[in-house]
Length: 413
Ligand SMILES: [Zn+2]
Image (cartoon, rainbow, N blue to C red; front, side):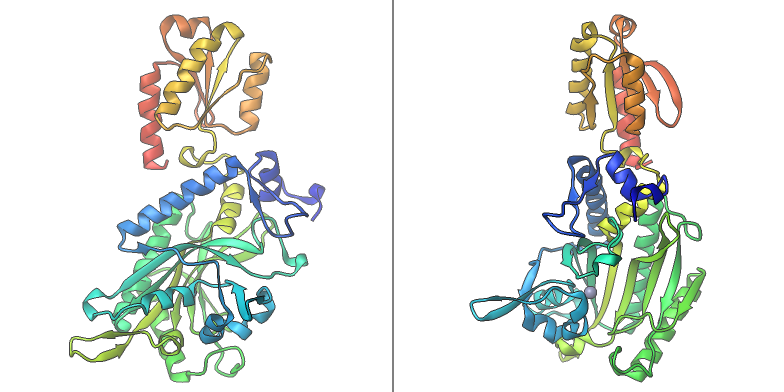
């Protein structure tokens, strides 16, 4: 899409204007390069979700971005997803592939030791870098890329009751995270129950009874939660039905943002088991889920939702200090240092421009707080505060401003 057909809040346009990310033909199509500013927003999102997941009983792990082709043959992802994966790479007579999915990596990690029923559910999460081949015509800013980071997890459960409970908890987490990100159910996102197709034996794992039961379980869960959802036939994963959280971008195109999936096939393929209360080995069950989905895609939604004016906790620069003239520079620098010491992301405008121009610059960058420093402020040991969202707040003591900002940041408002 050319620049002049882009909507004003199109994330590709805002990404350029606010210097959040870029692409280079030399690096390759669909492979985003994150600037320091874009990386800051992304890091805040990642910290938020990792901390929240740990609070909710997930353990966060790291597994490699590449693995032997055998692993994906075992999982069934290859050759099933062959067309959307990178071709295998041959090294020392062995074939490897950039990973398109995290699941088999987590299953192999689970298999390292025997597990007792008392240890289940095991909630294994990772901010996983994944690689998928998308046709160049399908690539779209951060929305559709060839390399992305999924806030992924696999929950190994002992029985159906536990699996359904865990699916419910995963939806609780998604709804909570969406709330923090300012996304409203019904307005910014809606639920979709994605079902299989018993006649399509090429696409879906064959287990008619298992599918019927799993689809019924998910529908019952959605009804119990009293949330509106649409049903979509033939939109399931190859291994089972799923609950998708759908969102629309600035151009009105709908995409799956987050997902919770019930897996009918992997426990058997990977022989995922646990020792039951009876001392015998039992087959475990698997739930796949992404909490805030692909970080790239979620960033695209958030950039468009806020039109680049991120809430304070996500803003790449939270405060900009504007000395009126060079005479005010020394005091402005001390203000800058005080803010920096408190972990508030701050910049100082040391240019020779007029105050009006400095203010306009900071506003174009959508910075939440502008601090003007002149004779008056130096004399009264204050800062002149202008808020992006509330307008002029006037002369304020720096320590009062710092405690107010720290409160807003920690509350993620
Ligand atoms: Zn998975």
